[in-house]
Length: 303
Ligand code: SF4
Image 1: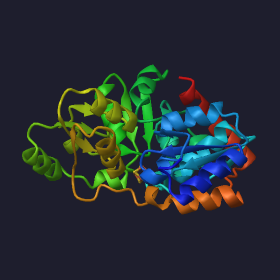
Image 2: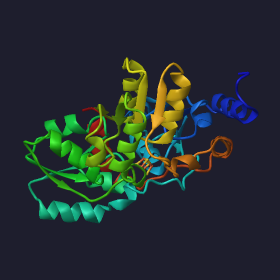
Image 3: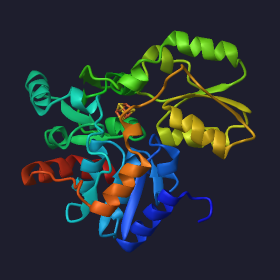
Image 4: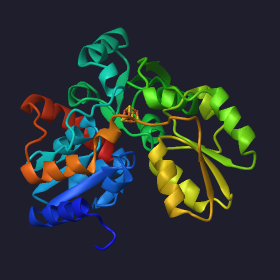
């Protein structure tokens, strides 16, 4: 415990005292990740929440992640350290948008990126993450797919599943969307020998340069396994910091100057400590939303 600061030690003590499982997303600050029981992307977070046997699950991430944990563990206490940390992309689609798209394309099934509200999941057929989207789209029993809310992930999936027709909602992640082709070309010029691993939430003009296009976990695994001594990372800045610490023998570079999700940075160590101490920031969902949304999320976790 000697490497932990005082607040981190308090968090570890409370965690044990309350039999709480703390799950952190890779984009939250490293000092929060360091006291978590597991650091995961959204898919692994959902799987771990579903299997948890602890009395309390604390989700160090944005609101939809807390909702997903509650959907999969409805009888547990699910806490969010920073309930005001939302995901702007998730907020770009409403249940009414999904119902309108359904009436416009009655033969299509609705695939909903896990970065969405429980209310949107409740009117969707199946959820997916960036790592499971291709497989789920290929296996879905239909010829047309409505994909919400991320137009970039949706078009990436559509390009790889050409046998189906896709109807895309025009949402996007502001953090990944602002990375431009010019940013990538400048980074590649500065580091010509680096391999480029990029997240499919980036636009097509960025993703097309990727040696790997994958989820956060897939980007981390790529960086660990590749023989390349230099790697260019096309996703949130905390991944660059994490890889620099984990792989000191490799040179890890970020693309662009401010690849930061401000919402994930709201999940501070102080917020985690207060959340465990007070247990006030519980995730609650209406019963009808909970049962309907769980169906599409279960299909994802069990697919
Ligand atoms: S990085 Fe983008 S998609 Fe992820 S939580 Fe932040 S705004 Fe949402």
